[in-house]
Image (cartoon, rainbow, N blue to C red; front, side):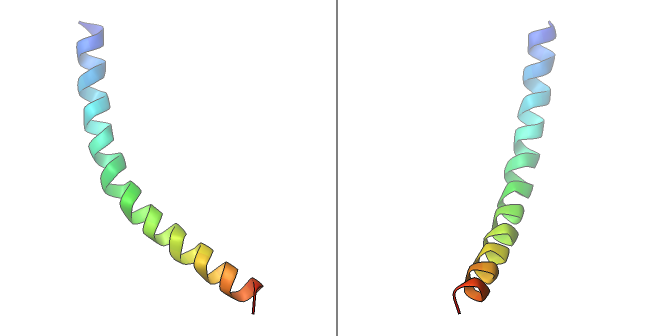
Length: 41
């Protein structure tokens, strides 16, 4: 029972993580590119 509930919760969180992970990844990627650009020019 507990495993079933936790797997449901984890699935829900995975959807959020994937959704927001993509956005965060794009933002982080942009920040890293800017930092590298500034560092090497």
